[in-house]
Image 1 (tube, helix red, strand yellow):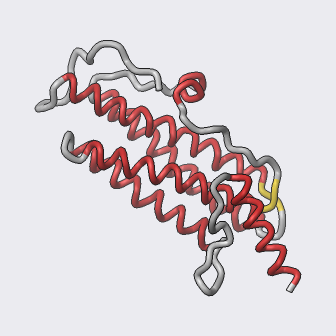
Image 2 (image 1 turned 30 degrees about the vertical axis):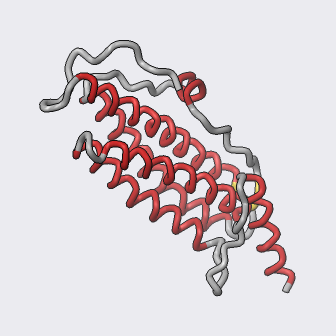
Image 3 (image 1 turned 45 degrees about the horizontal axis):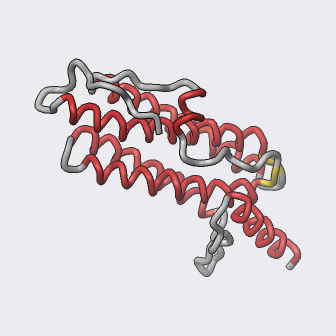
Length: 194
């Protein structure tokens, strides 16, 4: 991740410039992840096909809008801390620690399998960021915790499509988007063949 040089000239009352810079760096990682998530959700929205197309297509638009609102809130918090947020595609690509979403045009269940992996990564990293800000700044921590509520809800929506009546996820054991998509697709095909 590209680190900033220098400290902000100002930050919010009761925080030091060092605290403001630390919080801004934590938030920048979340800004990158949320921008990427919004783009990934829209990519899936455009590329999903199959019998569950309309359900997934329509489920994703509210998620895109909510994640875009999170992006705006995070960027504005970074600016409030006295640091300019980096929101360009080049900054996102240069600073991210994950690969691009790897699924193109595919069935709804395959995309949801891959999206399960995406949400797991975003939520895990968001939880770490919330923990890292817990002692430093209540406002930043509250922002991140509020995002977690929505992100976890959206993840549940995705997983509801992947879960059997017995509570088993079709993506269980997958560690990559492609493997999760493959497992979800195979489980759906197996269910359809029965």
